[in-house]
Image (cartoon, one colour):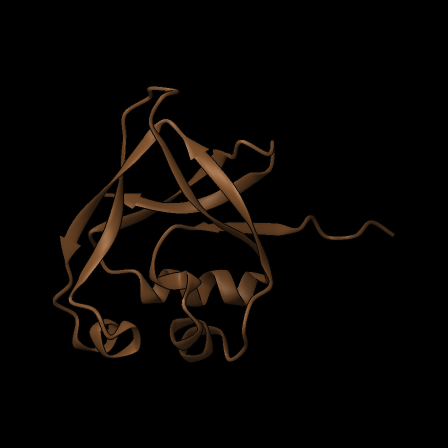
Length: 115
């Protein structure tokens, strides 16, 4: 019997906040700090009222890929279930897309970047 591979989600923004985790996942996630190289943060205006209500914020951070090792984004990596990853997909607006990345720790994780 093989165990399912863990699913890692790297967050640098509102998915780190307790109120968003509780509204989207129904629980607080346990995570640890990590770094995503090759990206930088910008801001995007959110217009979806449900997302604004969940986060309490109209402007959210968004990642732009630069490919430069000097550019890096600090955040938190969480182990999530497939259902929680689907809930995160539903939370993120169309400005974002989910991509697979390698974090500084060596973990492969999903992250939401500029679509």
